Every structure is written in structure tokens, then in C-alpha cells.
Image (cartoon, rainbow, N blue to C red; front, side, top):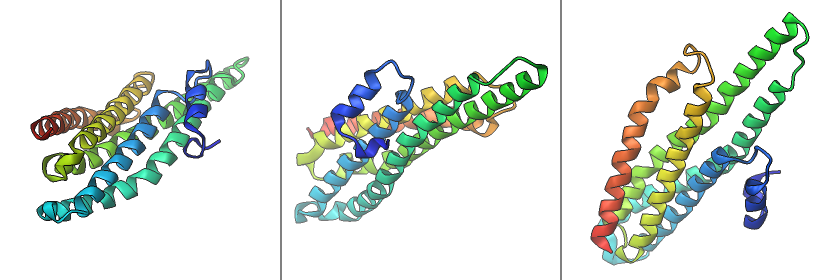
Length: 207
């Protein structure tokens, strides 16, 4: 199953089921893909009109960024579900002997680290996309200001949702694991906050 190739109704049915996957991390990655798709639309609407010629370079950059993010977002949606499935599998390992217990513990930790790394990449991709969303919100076709607004909301939701999934997995691990992610998160969260608010301010000023 690849979530990018399923129907919306089938995806929603899978999310609402009692199965642990797909869950919030996959939904965050899907939101990232939708943000990129909307951004591409706003960029095209800007490029299609000479009225917004001064924003054409920014629009082309935004379109390129969106085109690059969309397939990555689809891969991350699948990867996130797979990563958590690995955690579930690790918890089911035998624990009858000390050797089995040690193997199981290490397997759980390795899988949990992987389950943090995938949404961390989703958050990174969202953070890279947000400046382009802001550029279109500020300077793109004003007739698509509401679309830029929704793109910013989806991108920030993807970023914040992904960060939640990083944190909950890192909190289950020793502090010596995932150090790079732990160090990056405070700056990442502040960047998301600043860019998200700037996008909202730009959209409201152009509605």
C-alpha cells in the first residue's frame, strides 16, 4: 500500500481505524504534499499574469520547490507508517531469556529512532517550503491569497505535527540517542512559528 496512490476516502478510512498506522506522522506528510500542491498552483497563477511580473522569479522558485517536495512528501507518508510498524514488530519480539530481552530492547530503540527520523525529515521539508509560501503570500497573485493562506496552514501543520512525532519518539529513548535531532528542534520550532505567523499576516493583508 502506498498512500499517495490510494483514494482520499480509503486513506481517511485507514486513518480512522484502530490500527496504529497510518497515524499522525503520515497525515503530517500528506499535509506537506498538499501544501506543496497548493503552492504550485499559486505560483502558476502568478506566472500566468504579467500583472505579477515582479514576482515571477519568486514564483518560479516556489514552483520548483513545490515540484521537488511533492514526491518526497509521498515517500515520507509511506515511510512514516513503515517506521512505526517496525516499532510495533520490535515490541512483539521474544523476551524469555536475558539475551532475548537485550536483543528486543536494542531493536525497540533502533526502530524508535527510525520512527523519529522520518517525521524529522518531514519537518525539515516543511521548513524549507515555508519561505516560498511566504514569498507567494506576500508577492504572488493576490487573487490566490486565500490559497496561499491554506498552503501556509498545511505546511505549518505538517511541520508542527511532524515535530510532535519526533518528540514523542525521542522521549522514549536515552538522551544519547538522536542528539542531532534534539539539538535542532528548538531552532526548528521557532522557525516554524515565525514563518507561520508571517504567512498569516501577509495573507490577511491581501485578502
